[in-house]
Image 1: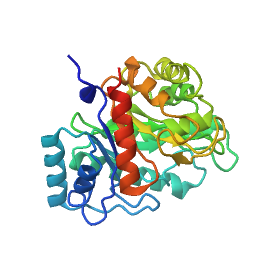
Image 2 (image 1 turned 180 degrees about the vertical axis):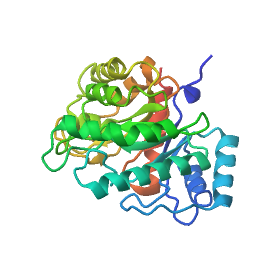
Image 3 (image 1 turned 60 degrees about the vertical axis):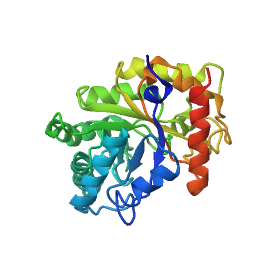
Image 4 (image 1 turned 135 degrees about the vertical axis):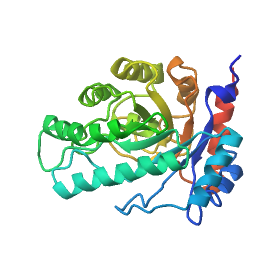
Length: 289
């Protein structure tokens, strides 16, 4: 029989300054996380640090021993739809680094934002460039490597993918590669116009997601409430139940067949106390019949 904990491990994005294992794992314990997400590079820069082999080993071993699934979030600057040649080239280097570091620390997936068409170029042109740059990275991945998880954005600018249904063309552009998966950010989805707060809204969004990419592709949920209303195209996270999504849609998400075994990771404000409270709130929602 599937226990609630096995169905949806609940955790958070943890700080790793000062040591991936030393700080990241201790923080995860303080907030009672059952899953973790980390940065392996400055999220707002292009640097590709090598990491610390001892910290990598300790992190990987401890996560495995505690049954904690781990994920890497790639830097925010990555944009495979950029019209700027330097940005496109750096995006390849940066994502390859995140994928390799993900393998080193035993991560199940590496999350990357789906990007946008810049410089006034057509969406189809930007998506074709994303295919050209990302397919070789996907083909490099072996069985032991993490999956590449596409995270739709909140709909700002000329987004290549924001509404969950837009994942379909993105997956087609990448030949529905077997190492390709999805990270659904609830704040992004809501901001883009998927009304998770409406009656049946969470179910509809997940039905649309499965319809676009097929079953088994959803591998991670970023569980974030939204400071702004549905369709605002603003990526401003709020604590669980304190925003315009509300608490109940998160229970609906965890009750949908598509989320079986899928971890939820919070990226909410409030520091340690706020993170612990959000995780506890989600666990209550998960465990309520």
